Amino acid sequence: MKGLSLTTNKEKSELIASVDPLMFGPLLDKEKLVEFVNTSEFGHFHLSANSILELEESIAIASDENDMAIITQVIGELKEVAVSVSLSEDNMECTASIAANSGSMLPNINTVKEQLKTAGVKRGISEKRIRQLLQLALDNSSDKPVKIVVAKGLPPKKGKDSIVKPTVPNAIDRILAPQESDDSKVDMRNLGDILSVDARQVVAKRIAPTKGRSGFTVTNKKLAASPGEWKVIKLGKNTVISEQNENTVIATIAGQPKFKNDVMNVDDTFTSKGVNVGTGNIKYNGSVVVNGDITEQMQVVADGDVTVNGFVESALVRAGGDIIITQGATGKMNIEDCQLIAGGSIFIQHGQGLDIISGKDIHVAKQLAYSKVKCRGEIIVGSGEKPMGNLFASSIICHKTLRAGSVGAVSGSQLIIDFSEGYNVLAQRAEALTDLFNTLSNANADHEIKIAALNSRHIPAQLKKKLATLTNELDSERILLNWLRLAKEEMAQKKQDYEMHARIIANKELFPGVIVKLNKKMWKAEKEYQRCRVILENGAWLYDPLTQ
View 1 (cartoon, rainbow, N blue to C red):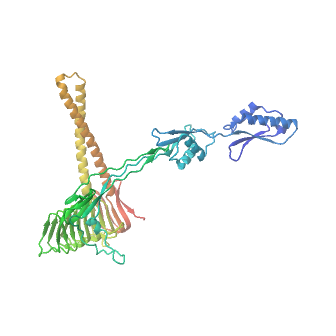
View 2: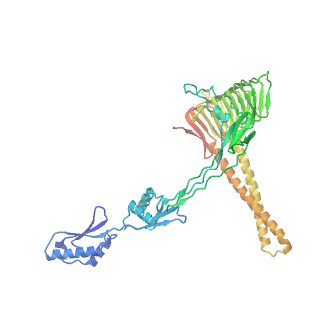
View 3: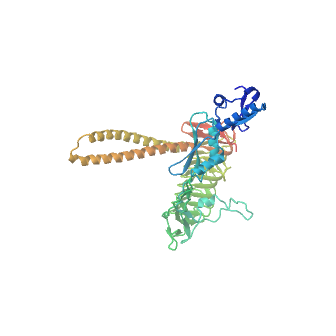
């Protein structure tokens, strides 16, 4: 339209018409103005009929008075887009949506919050999610609305069940926490007194269940929490529940405490000042504490733990539980005539010439060399979160992560670390489960067809009972098949977890001569590496430097 131009204000929320009376003429055609606006770049503005009427009057007055000044009038505005609010059936979530409409002005955060409150939403409102909603709407170029959860309730949290906690430490925990001297320095030689408890001494307590945490809906309805449950105390060897306090466990004999799998046991303990030709070998149905050395060719065999507050030289120590040697153990190099065999974990200060078999973890405080090791848990050489001990010139079978400071030696002496055994056990179990599952699955498919065929026929009354029995057997078969399917999946996950934990961590350096194996997958260090780890990734061993 000649003599009329359109602009917006700074916020681009209002449409302004500017009229030059000299060029425009005395009359405004309102229909042409509306058409002009709708076909222009400002067609998304909502026009105001009253404002257009005011503009028409201003133009007429200017013409009558021969006033040639530019006339400006706001004739339209952007309207805020509507925000739709919906609540989930349980009132735990509120979703806000904005329709696709490029011609509408987006509301601000406070406006959205007010709309939520109007819809009854009082708690759990997230300004971050509202901003995200507005940004998505701003970037939306499709014809579909955008929606997002902008408020969430808090589900109630069930209380924790009662638990049993030991009141005395395990020997293995004590050994890994050396005592402080008077000047607050840790003395690795001082591991405290040999741990034992007296008869009638409290060894564990049951901690009460917690009340849990209440929750709320987005409409601010309080959701009550369920308290935890009182769990029955499981009693171990030589323990009873106190008559005075049903939440207290006491020892019935003097012995060595051991807390495992939420059960406190007290082993009958045999104590010796040393084991040598003078004392003879020890074989004991309980735990053994040796306050001295175990000399060459001697044997200590115990069903429980064996604690040696001294040194072991070319001897046999076998324990159904843990083996703790507060000093060191040594055997002849290349013969490994010092045997340490434990159903649990093994702790030693240092060792060489050892033949070690451990059902759980192995902790070596300083150095392990010229030894043969079989460990079904982790191997840690050194102390603390970043062990810095030395490991070299040994043959090791390990089922989990091996951590040390220096792995291998400058001389390049061979150190073999083999993760095959544990993996192969899992692989054999997985294969057996798969074979059994496939066999049963085929049989079940055949049985399903036959039972379905029988059910489709007329069954005489005298045979219906037998058919019902067959149907029940088929149900049992289905349950077994489902259990096998889950067991097969669980075993596959265990194999993946095993590969993830099969790794070497060298916190200081790794030397040439180190060989890492898992069946045919092998990695050999050809040079010296600084702080690094060797991990199994995508079926292959990979060197990975430690940057932190």
